[in-house]
Every structure is written in C-alpha cells, then in structure tokens.
Image (cartoon, rainbow, N blue to C red; front, side, top):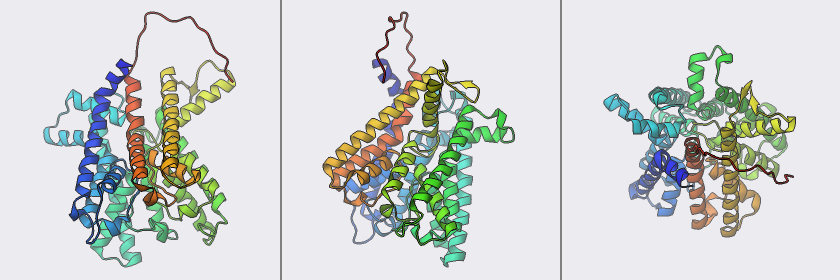
Length: 446
C-alpha cells in the first residue's frame, strides 16, 4: 500500500493538485461581484460548484448561465472549460514548449500521467497534436455556429461569434454549458446547430492518442493500434445503439419527441446519445423522459468516452476490456484476446479495479444524496452518474438539492474527472516484484 501511495504522489498527485488549484482559483473569480449580473449574487458554494463543473468539464449548473453570470463570469467559464479540456499538465507543457522549446523530465512525466502518453519521449509530439486538434475543431465548430446564428436567427455578428466560440469550447471539451436556459431545446429542429455540436462532442471524446494513429495511418486500418480500433469501434456501437434505444423509448412521448417529424426524432435521439457520452447538452427536455430512457442514459454516461479525451466515465476501452474478459471466460480460453492481440493480465486487473471503484463511488454518492435530498432514486441516480461521469445532463433537480447535495456532486465531479486518470496512472506505475509465491487455493465462485 505504501508503494502504491508513493506512486500516486508522483506524478499523479501533481495532476490532482493542479486541478484543485484551478477549481479554487475559478471559484474565487466567480465569487467576485463582477462575475454576476446586476442584482445577482454568488455564494461560495455555488461558485465552487460552478468552477468544479467547468474545470471538470461536466456542465451541471446551479444557475442559468446567461442570466446569472456576467460576460466576465462567462469568459471565466470558457477559460476554465478550456483548461479542463486541455488538461492542466498538457496546457502547462504547451506553454513551456512555446517559451523555452524544452520540456524537463518532471514535466514530461506529469503530462504523461494526464494524457496517457506511452512514454516520456512521446509527450512533446502529443501536446503539439493536442493543441492542433483542439484549435482546428473549435475553430470549425465556432465558424459554422456563428454563421448559422447570423443567417438563420438574425444575430449581430459580434454576438453570433461569441455564441459560436462559447459553444464550440463547451462541446469540444465536453463541458456542456449553454447560454440559454433550455440548453439546446429551442434548436431541436435545426440540424445546422445540432449536427455541428454533436460532431464537436464526438471529436473531443475520441481521445488524442486516436488522432495520432489516424494522422499516420488513416488509410491503413490494419496498422491502427488496438486502442484506436477499440475506441473507434466502441464509439460507433454506443452511438448507434444509444440512438436506437433512446429514439425507440421516446418515439411516442409527447413531452419530448412525440410532436417531431420522424427524421427530427432520429436526430434528437442521436443528439441525446452523443451528449450522454459526456457532452451534457440536451435538445429535448430530459426531465420529461421516460424512466427507461433515464436508465439507458445512466449506462451510456457511466461508460463515457475515450481514454485521454475530454470526456468522462470509466472510458470505452475499460468497458470493452471487461467484455473481452467475460467472453474469454465463457469460451474457456486461457488468454484474453482482442483483434489477434493478447491483453496483458495487468491491464485486465486495472480495468476491473477502475470499474468496481467507479461503481462504489456511484453507489456511495447515491446513498448520500438520497439521505440529504427529497428526490426519488431514479432522479438521484441519474444526477450522481451525470456528475461522476462529468456529463452534465440532469432531470432538473440540480438547483434544488441544497448545499449538502451540491457539495456531494462537487466531490463526485472532481473524483470522476481525476479518479480514473490518477488511479490508472498509479496502477500502471505500480509493479511489485516478489521473490516467492504463496500456495494456490481457490474459493468457490458463483
């Protein structure tokens, strides 16, 4: 245990402390009078909650973002979302490269822990790639959105550009903040708004290691890494399956999709399926969905997006590895394999550990929230998984859970954003060698 704690201390502890510092700094800025509109006020609890939600790219909000926060406050949110999406260690490494053109070993190790880079020598290449992908994706999304706001809604160019940049950052970083009280419900019939937002969320949720593979071998899938194949394959399966399931369960619901045309219902189902991956925006009223849809959303939110991405959850690769373990056991095979590759036992244990600890976190969080709030299990479980998975969707209870509930959700957002990262890095670094083995004996299972 002591060795594991030592591994957590460096470099993973640096990542945790950096994110904590960003949260506290953001909370301090949002607590300033200049950060809120005239006549409004921000308590320290709400400022801390909002800053955590932004840095951990969650999107849960206590207040109506546009009505409560001033332009200064909204700019603070944009900066916090960008910092959280980039990753603080990645951002600091980018700045170090710009300033000095060099990265020290400590900076490489810290960034390696946060971005899941294969080795310290790969860090510089990764962070440059992170910067390029982020800037290009956000610029394209902002341009399309701004043009649509001008052409389709008659917004002034300046305001349209501001809306475009804010929501481009919010979606690519999978943060889920919106400048309208109904999120994106007013645009449910507008594919020129909904489609760019979903594409930005998908792009941010793939993970930067996937882009590195695609850049070098995008024409030769046979040379893709196993990680890239699993991430892309599982992303496609979850997006298609989620769209099918949500559209089917909400097809006749007059409070959500029932009054839309068939094509728009499919688009709304796709939008919701994408946003459960960690995007956090909604084009239909999530609070009016069927309980079956909530359960489907719970599963999708818990799985989340790709490793080393801006998304949350236990990650699609973790989920896929558990599936491969189960499949190998059912077949009676001695090794766990995927794509003609054998999965190391250490990775199998890491996936199982992360998944079970995540289940424990959600369970404990749900029990505590049930004790401090008056809401039923369905709504509380949805809120807890949304916070832990850094998704940001809600059944409408976020503002009403009280100070105790906000603190619980704040903790879940922080743990959900950093827990899998730091735990995964610690487990990867923690390799203990023994000079002896105990006698083997197996208890009954099942």
